[in-house]
Image (cartoon, rainbow, N blue to C red; front, side, top):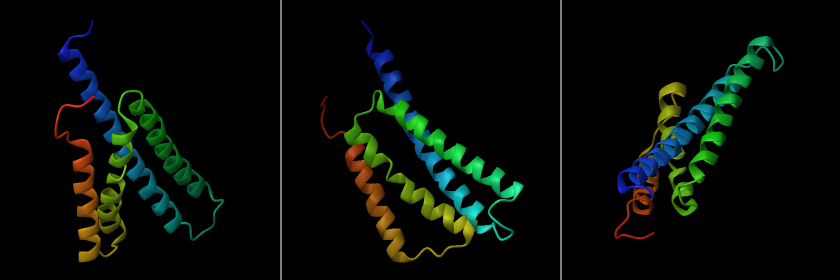
Length: 127
């Protein structure tokens, strides 16, 4: 029989894997955007293929870690957490691609973030 400490550690690890999945997903999307934004010389150059391969590989890592997280995290919790992709993409697009962040976008992302917190943080003990 597992102790409470072992179960807690296992649960925390599952949530870390879920967050790693979100980070891989954000990174994969940003790398895809970077690859496609810099493909002026053509779609079948060696440099383009390398960049595209890297971006798809990172995105595939997101899928693998997502599957691993689903082993123990409830889908009703895991799926809303993936909405954090919106937050990461918004700030990544601003930082890497100089996209404009409007007040409306900030309010939208804040709403998503607060919604994720409401889904993930338990208000009472439930199994």
